[in-house]
Amino acid sequence: MDKLLEILHELRPELDYAHNDSLIDGGHLDSFDIVTLVGELNDAFDIEIGVEDLIPENFNSVAAMWSLIQRLREQV
Amino acid sequence: MPFTSFAFILFLAIVVTVYYVTPKRWQWVILLVASYVFYLFAGARFVPYLVFTTLTTYGAAIRLDRINKQYNAQLQSPAHELPREDRKVLKIAAERRKKRVLTLVLLLNFGLLAFVKYFNFIGDNINALLADLGAGAAAPQLGLLLPLGISFYTFQSMGYIIDVYRGKYEPERNPAKLALFISFFPQMVQGPIGRYDALAPQLAAPHSFDYERAKQGIQLIIWGYFKKLVIADRAAIFVDQVITYYTAYTGLYIPIAIILYAVQIYTDFSGGIDIATGAAQILGIDLAANFRRPYFAQTIAEYWRRWHITLGAWMRDYLYYPLALSKGLARIGKWLRKKVNNRFGVLFPALMAEAVVFLVIGIWHGPAWKYIAYGIYYGLLIVLGMLLQPLSEKATAALHIKTDCFSWRLWRVLRTFALTCFGRYLTRAPNLGDSYQMMKLTVTEFNPGILLDGSLYTLGLDAKNIRLLFAAILVLLVVSILQEKGYHIREKLQEQNLVFQWAIMLAGIFAVLIFGTYGSGYDATKFIYELF
Image (tube, rainbow over all chains, first blue to last red; front, side):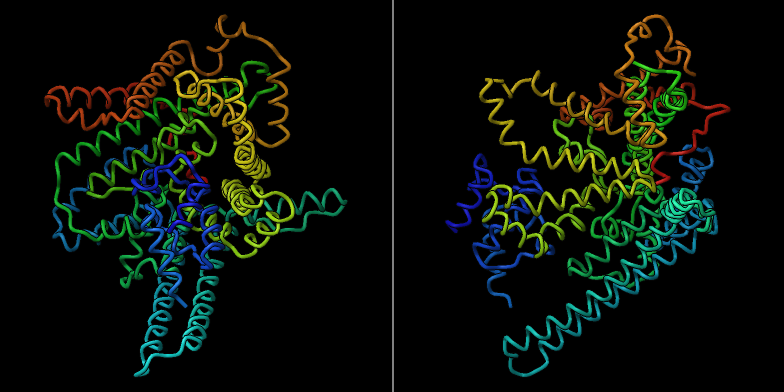
């Protein structure tokens, strides 16, 4: 979880990740941020986030991203 | 049957009446019949194209679903769970079969779109090349006419099939319901490009007549007509005159025409969308938003998030993300991070994907080099904007520029508008050579006198019409500013007394009837985006 926060802070330091649950729907992270973020997450957690995972619900909050990461780690 | 014809209003009135007297479970059938009747008016010979896309999309979606089901059954069939390795093998096999189906249906449909759009263009270029080489024309000319709305319904149905492929939702099992999703008449001419999960449930759902909704729909339609007939079609007269004879109207005439063209294309396109959205609203159906006051954008990237939103979203989900996340680009990005520069490496996949998206948007606009140049222009602006962002942040900080104030935002809005106007030189000129000449003539002649001596009244619009045009644009500006401030005009109107509400509506209707641009020599029925 710390690693995820670290990546997010590096990406957009000005955002308050702890209290924001509409990172995508609120327009705080744009498609460009998402692509950069996915690249970092894939490397850091050794997962493969696919295009089908790129829905707002998976990226709106830190908790949602964390559960996505967990889910992908368990998958084949 | 164009939106701006009396026939369309009559058609809509009949559809709405029949729709609401029909038993609710059959309402969707009325919409389907109405949509095909609407399409038949455009030309019976175009119907096979629409049916082809509907059938191939339907078949492919069902096939994809069957592969998914078989795969899931295989996973669960043995009493004990399959070992991880075997599951992986099954998964890869299923993915491969799904990919084959998807590739086929995409090739068929985008192939058809490309064929009808670009056949003549490629033929012309081959012939021109052969002529340059001294040979005669060889490539045949088919004289194909573009089927109405083919770009828009192709994008919409291909978005659906990719979503089914990705497992976002179950496919539609009723071919007639899918046919309605693809052909729903308000949006099929020029969008907005709808998403299946947002639109299809609304189309199938029962709807009771709602007076307030209908009234809001009618208001939106009137507003759309105002934009299209009072502003766009009036501005078009001036713009067409200057651009057609630009060598006679040099200097300041050209940028004025280009700025008016920016107004024209926005009011033409968004006016048409308003009419479509209003018509759907009367039927109880909400279409996706396609514009959010694009000329108030502070950056080019933001402009593209406000202009033709559903196309941008389509490109993001179905082209940009797959490209930016592709393994090939990720590998190059990683290599660049190590060897060249960390930030550049991180940005690289997104930048490349961005560039491809804009090239595709350019090519989509039409079979001409100028549109390709236009795509490259915006691609470059976005990529440069991204790369230079840290530098510009440093510069504003070093120069102690206040960035949280109206004047700075205004400057950014005007700068963005100017950049989009530059892009319009590329698209509005007949071809690239002309747009270069127009740019040159803009800066090599200095004639501010034309602003005062009445010269502007000689370009197809007399003094009265020019004043009217400016008054109408002012109304649009005020309304846009109010909307930007979060003021919901139609909802506020709802709170007023009935007399006032109807006074405003009638004023709108009369404004359109009296000040709309009609008459000989100008074809008010054409929408610019119909041709894309």
